[in-house]
Length: 148
Image (cartoon, rainbow, N blue to C red; front, side):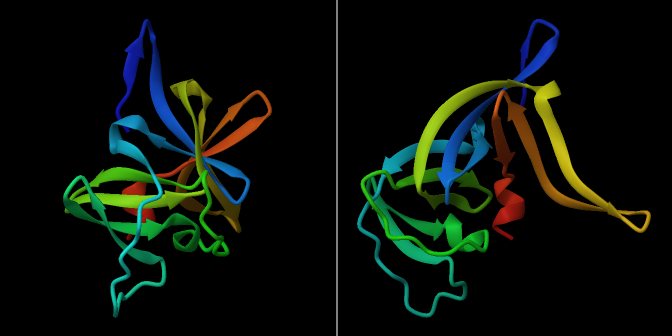
């Protein structure tokens, strides 16, 4: 993730969104735009269950993935709060369907902790980090790891 230097403490801008009542975040430089739900054209024969289809985003066909399904959560009907986070990936833009986009936060690098578990002397990393701010715990996602 890119950092923004603010005096001598590194700061990150994070887009906060919600899935199944849990808060998640993406570094703002990865997010091109936040869109209201658009009509989805389903793609027959998609190899992954979480691929919802494609949307016409300003004249360009953009693939969209239901992030709930990608993370192993149950599907949920889309409503007025559902959003598409358009993220920049190596092959181009990809839309991530989320329950709602809540907030934009500045966080200090010192507030970020890696998530890992130690068992039998071995460390198992989940490839994610969390931010604890007051009573909130926000899971930071790295889209390139999540979308593999």
